[in-house]
Length: 483
Image 1 (cartoon, rainbow, N blue to C red):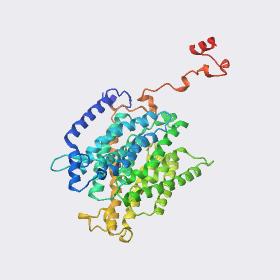
Image 2 (cartoon, helix red, strand yellow):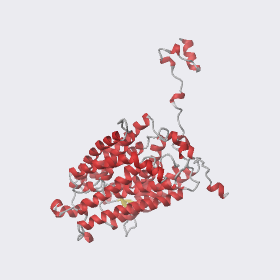
Image 3 (spheres, rainbow, N blue to C red):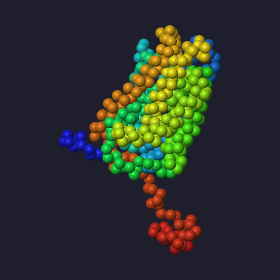
Image 4 (cartoon, rainbow, N blue to C red):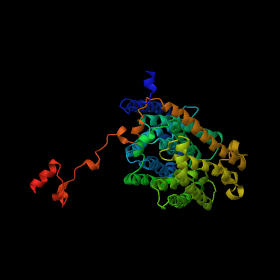
C-alpha cells in the first residue's frame, strides 16, 4: 500500500479534491471574515461621518477612496488580466494559464486581507481588522507573490496544488512583509523585495523540489504557437502599461507618488530598447524572440519597485532600465538553460529572469539610493516623509537605512527559498492530482475543451470552388444536391 501511495502513479481526477478545497476554504473565509473583518473609518457610514466632523472635513472627495481607487483598478487589472494572459503562451495550456490564475488570485486576496490584517491592522482593543481601499491594493500585492511562483510551475501542477501554493505563499508573504517593512523599517512601495524577490525564489524553490526527470516526454507541448504568443503579448502590454500604477499605488500622496510614476515609466521605456537589442544579438540571423519581448521588457518595472519612490533621478531610472533589459534577456538566452541542465531547475515562464534576479537587484539598488540620500537633495521634511524617519527611527542615519534595505532583500530571498523547499515537499505527496510527465502543459488534464477547428468540416455553401472539394459530410452532400 505504501509503495502504491508514494509511487510515481499520477491521476488527474480532481472531482473530489478541488471542490472540497474550494468549498471548505471559502466557508472558512466566511467564518473568519465574520469574526475579524470590519470596514475602516473611511468606508464605514457612521465612522466616516464622525471622521469628517473630527477632522473638520466638509467634502466626501477627501475620502482616501478617490486617491487610491484608480491605482487599485490598475493593479487589479495587472493581477487578473496581465499575469493571467502573460501565462497563455503555451500552445495547449492557455485555459490553465489564465483560468488557474483567476482561481488562486480570487482565493489569495481573501486570505491576504486576513493575514495582512492580523499583522498590520488588528485593533488590540476590539480584536477586529479594519479594511479600506489601501487594504485591497495590499491584498492584490500579496497575491502577486503566489502568481509569480505559479509561473515557474506552469503546466506541471494541479489546481489543488496551486491552492496549497497560494495558502502558504500568502502566509509566508505576510510574515516576511511584516519583518521587512515593520521590524526592519525598510521602504519597498513597489515590492522589489517583498513581492518579486520573495515570489521569484519561492516559485523556483518549489519547482526545484518538484523536479521531473522525464519532463521531456511533454516536450512537444512545452512551446508556443503563433496565436498563443499573441495572447501572451496582450498580458505583457497590460503589465507594461500599468506598472507605474503598481509601483506608486501605496506611495505617499503628492511628490512621492508623482515621482514613482515618472521613474518607473522611464525605466520601462529604456528596458524595451535593450531587450530588443540583446534578443536580436542572441540569434545568428538577428531575429527577435517573442519570449524575450513578452518578459524581459517588464524587468525594469520589477527592479524599480523599491527605488522608484526615492530621488533616483530620471537618468538613474533610465540606467536601471537599460541594465535590466540586458540582464533579463541574457538570463532567458543562457541562464535558464544552464539552470535546467545543471541545477535541475525547470522554470516554465522564466521567473528567475523576470522576477527573482531583477527583484533582488531592485532591492540592492534601493539600498544604495537610500544610503546616499542627503538632506540637501530631499530636504529635511522630505527625508522624514520618504523614509518614515519618525518615532523610534528619528535618529536613524541614511547609511544605516541603506544597510537595513539590503538586509530586507536578504530576508525576502531566505523566506522564498526556505519556504519554497518546505512547500515543495508537501506538494510531492501523490494526493494532489498532478499530471504525469507525459501529460504536462496540456489543458485536457483539467478542462473540458472545445473541438479543434481542424476537425470541423468546411461550410461548403460559402465556397465558390466547392465543386472541386471532397464531400465527406451529410450536410455538404445535401447542399450539393439542392444546388
